Image 1 (cartoon, rainbow, N blue to C red):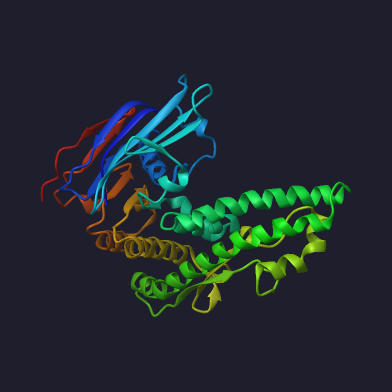
Image 2 (cartoon, rainbow, N blue to C red; image 1 turned 30 degrees about the vertical axis):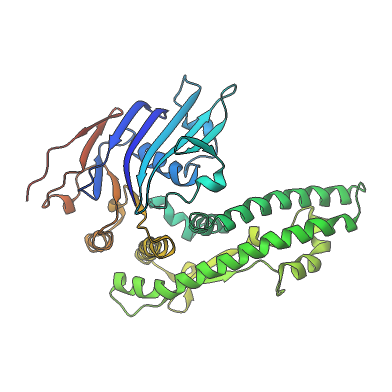
Length: 368
């Protein structure tokens, strides 16, 4: 799949921006100083895939200051069709959000999945370092881009969990009975088991490829794997876990078990990554995960995903830079950087663009 064009209207620092992507050049590199809007362009592409930003949960942050709406449009070409995708975000009385596919309004369930992206940013290392919520989000993003079943179950699960948590508080206060939990527990289990099943499939896929990819990067006989830590209180099913944790849930007044508390543990050479890995090993594992994502989406959708690289070459040494470039051949890639990296200095590159104060202009082609 390829993004043919991108149009931003009243989005972040762009009043009106149109970008066309050269069909003969798989790599587009946007070069410019910090705080010029490079990442905003990648964020807009991210919206076309997932309808949400990777930087903020507030849609109002996307809207240019002094205006009451923004619009992101993209023309996407796949092996079978050309799609026109649009995300609209507004401040009341404008609609707060509207999604369109081929100019027809649609739901997020039908919108997400039309475009698969792999996003690579230096802050992605936080997913390996910090709390389990980041790792769950990573796993969710992998799955919702290939499975509407998963996305539907995730949305329903979160809504049901909120209702169950509210009921737990009412029981604690004497306004409801424990028997009232039964219907919510049944529904929570139906959706939660879908999430657990699909997450396990994704983890199994990761373990079938990750070690080989990591060893190629490290150039050592290393073994990397991922453990799926299900939050089921040592019970075989979510239904059993909810029964076991009932008294704890009543005391805490929220649901203490289930997919919303799952985690992933990364293992390197038989030991948890967090207990011994160096900074370089963390970077190698993150690179391995991103390369794995490329094959994951291609195998699941029969389309190569779009790769977004946000100033990542500064985090990679020359060998890892080259390995990344060798692995993305045939995949449309949009790169942002503050300067022309060494890998560009010796190749013809028609996709070079300069950015300054929100304006983008082509750079002269680099000759071989």
